Amino acid sequence: MEGGGGSGNKTTGGLAGFFGAAGAGYSDADLAGVPLTGMNPLSPYLNVDPRYLVQDTDEFILPTGANKTRGRFELAFFTIGGCCMTGAAFGAMNGLRLGLKETQNMAWSKPRNVQILNMVTRQGALWANTLGSLALLYSAFGVIIEKTRGAEDDLNTVAAGTMTGMLYKCTGGLRGAARGGLAGLTLTSLYGSVLQQSL
Image (tube, rainbow, N blue to C red):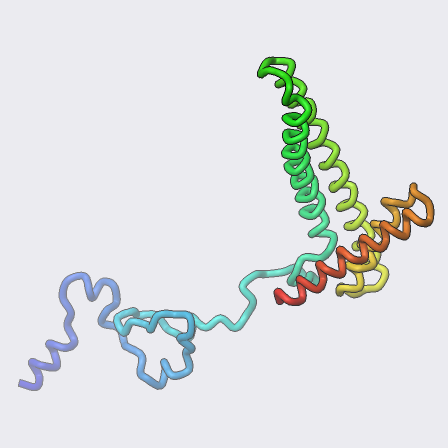
């Protein structure tokens, strides 16, 4: 009776033996050190060593000496492109508004459509160039300040914004440069404070 029961427990039929269902299971002591946070509880029918599921290393492989976050140089391309596209979209909307306002007394015809289209392209290019130039100056100053100081913090952001405003408005003399620097200082300070509150 005991022999029959023992042999019955050792043999498995069908596809279960093919997939290794008859392999040795893991005791509670083996499973005790496995964290299950963020995972569903492991099924006792899976023939997987749970110790291999523990991730104690970084998920991504980085080159030696590389930072885990993007630096200012990497973010510069996104900043410049994003500002150009934002300026083009805003300028196109502003050009459409101005075009419709200036041609409101004209009947819908080809000359009116051409005039509106010219206004949309002119305003879109103007705003794209303006915001793209500001983003280029800001990114260049940010990279230079970061490389000079050897640190990445909010001081770099505020200094880059202030210098960008001063250089962009320097054609208006000292007073214009001071106003541009003050505007850049204010905008980057607000950006830094909002960023700190979101973290």
